[in-house]
Structure formats: structure tokens, C-alpha cells
Amino acid sequence: MSRIPVGLAGLGRMGRVHALNLAYRCSTARLGAVYDADPAEVPDAAFLPEIGHREAIERGLRVMDSTALSLCMDNGLPIYVFNLADESNIDRIVSGERVGTLVQ
Image (cartoon, rainbow, N blue to C red; front, side, top):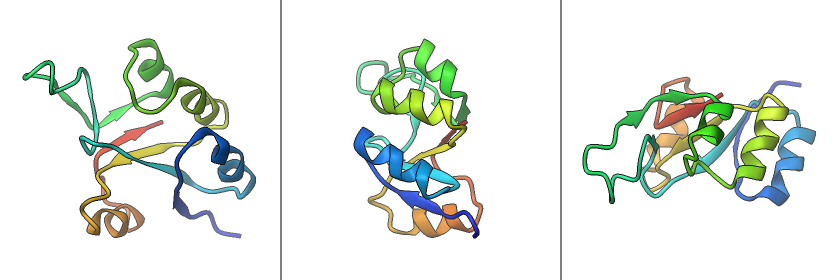
């Protein structure tokens, strides 16, 4: 069975992502990516194209709730954080293009 990306949200669904042997967890974000600080509060916040699960937790970055982020880390599940408002982003991710931030 091939592994496919999926868009799910919330801690309750993390078990399903793992049970279905899916390749990625997709997480939509207000900003469309992960930054080193909240751009609304820090105008020169830097976009992070990639970051590790542990680093995101240690730096207190709000990728998603810390329990769900820890579960992804424990299960080796990469997370794509992207803007769902741009409907082409899902196709771009499935095609292998880098969109938003990859947390792995």
C-alpha cells in the first residue's frame, strides 16, 4: 500500500494518521508557514522553510499543540504547515514541491 499525504487537524485524529500509515500530516496555518516569532508582534520574524519537531517544541513555536507535535515526532511523521486558502497548495505538496514549512 502506498503512503499518501493527508490533511487532518487536531490531536484526536493523530492516531488515525499513524494507523493509516500516511506519509505526512498536513497542518494549515493562519500565516501559511512557521516563523521564528509571531510576525504580528515581531515585524522582522524569519520564515523557517524547515525545522525539526524537537526544535519547534524547545523554541516554543506554535506549529500546533505540543501534544500533537510530540506524537508526530515520536512516530516520525513529517508535518507540512501551509496556507489552505491557496487551493493549489495541496496539489503542489502532493507533486513534491516545497510549500510553507516542513517540520520533520
